[in-house]
Image (cartoon, rainbow, N blue to C red; front, side, top):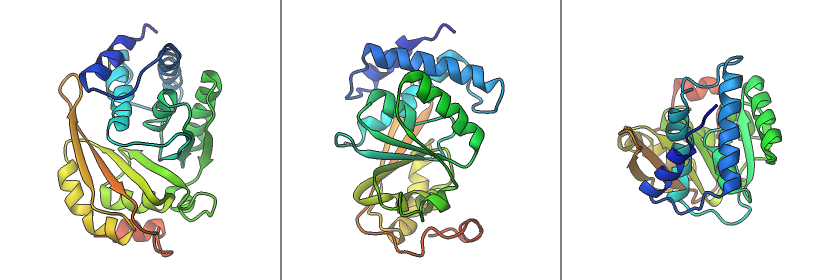
Length: 240
């Protein structure tokens, strides 16, 4: 596949991303795109399969996260409901020092991610679990500097999935579409109940005109032991 890596590079410049994309990262992104398209013919990973759209709507959109937060060297990062690896695997390609955990409930997606990380020479822990299960596991509860998710659920639900993974002083960052402001308002009470502080909204426009937002919330205190609740409770009565 002839992948337009120049669109990623131009997007970095246009959006003023504070990170250098070196030759190794470029090669890994090109290889990642090829594997995504090839595997997508066998299992449903993404509706976005055109190289230009992968460059902008997957790779660049994931990378923008690095503009709105600071992560220390070797920070632990968990991508909750990672799907095809966005945004977590893109962050790992651009910041190989990060200690990445990719969590998903579907084994077939994790098989794809195992193939990608092996082919790209990247290390990542792959966890087959629902977010509610992982958030109660002592190995992962309040163990990460960053929990992130992209297009998984509405923010009041997503906060309950993600904040239990974050240690005090760490961040929960949700990658959203153009309705970020409304979701911030909907989730304010939920974030507080779960140990989060006031959310901050960062909006941007991708090349091509699509509006996106990132909701950033600092973890200010421990999440009460009763959270996360079981899936039926979360669905029936979202917090907030």
